[in-house]
Structures are given as structure tokens and as C-alpha cells.
Length: 198
Image 1 (tube, rainbow, N blue to C red):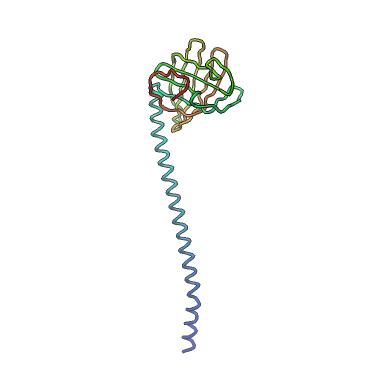
Image 2: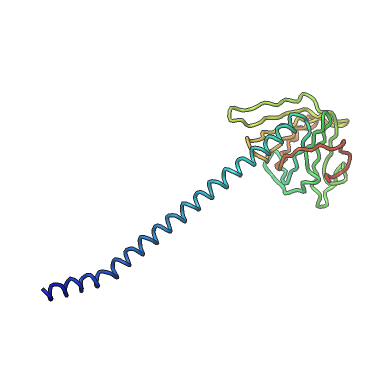
């Protein structure tokens, strides 16, 4: 009997480290699972907040476009052959203030141009303004700008909850197409008369 009792005690003592190790492994796995779940929840919360912020910003931009007070500041300009160039957003833009529009591109880098900035500035009256939406909720905009020496058609599509667009400018004077790629934002200031945006 004593022998049997000793054998049982020995078996129990031997199995204790195995049980403890198994318990530690389970705790570690549970902790890793909890950490992964917390990270997943944090990412989902961040994504939801970002989507909400984008939606609010889109509403402001949508309102500015509807009121005809916005600017597209381009950080890249592309011609109809696909050649593109990085440009300064403060001197490359499409601006609409009520019925007054300004389109300016300025390549700089030693290029000459009628506006003294290596490009062209067109200031004129905006007409034939059209705004509609695609089935996906993307906003489509187009207008004609009639200046003293040149007229152009401007069009772009702003993706739903987006901040960036490609504004295509088609000149009626020499069939030149330029695409202004950049950020669109509200612009409520007095009539712009400078050479670069503040």
C-alpha cells in the first residue's frame, strides 16, 4: 500500500511541471489572441474615424463646389501626350469664385511664358457650369471659362469622400489639353488678383 501511495505521489509530482507548462502555453496563446483582437478593434475604429472625417470634409468641399467657391491646387500637370511634371501648387491651380475663374499653370525652371512664370494665366467669366453625380456618388463638375485672349473648358470628377481630383483643361484656342492633378478645397476670399496663391 505504501508502495502504491509512493508511486501515485511520484506520478503527481512528475506531471506538475507538464501541467504548469501546458497552462502557461494556454495563457500565452490567450494573451496573443487578446492582443490581436485589440489591434484589430483599434484598426477598425481608426478606419471608421477616418471615413467619418473624409465624409465631413467631402461635405464641405461639395458645398464649396455648389456655391462656386473652390480651388484645385495642382502638384502635377500632365499634357495630352501623357508627359507629366511636378509643379508648385501655389502657382498651378484652377480657381472659381462665383462667376469669376482663374486657370494658371507655371512650369518655372527657366521656361518663359506670357504670365512671366513659365506658363499661362487665364482669367475670365465662368459659364455653363454643370454639377451632377454618378451612381457611386462621385461628383462631376464642368464649366467654360471665357478670357480676353483664350477660352477653355474645365472638367473633373471628385470621388465620393475624396480630396484629390484630376481637373482637365481643354483650350478652345489651340486644342491643348492639360490635366491638373491635386487637392481640391474651399476658397472663400475676395477676387484673386495675385500671381500665386497665399
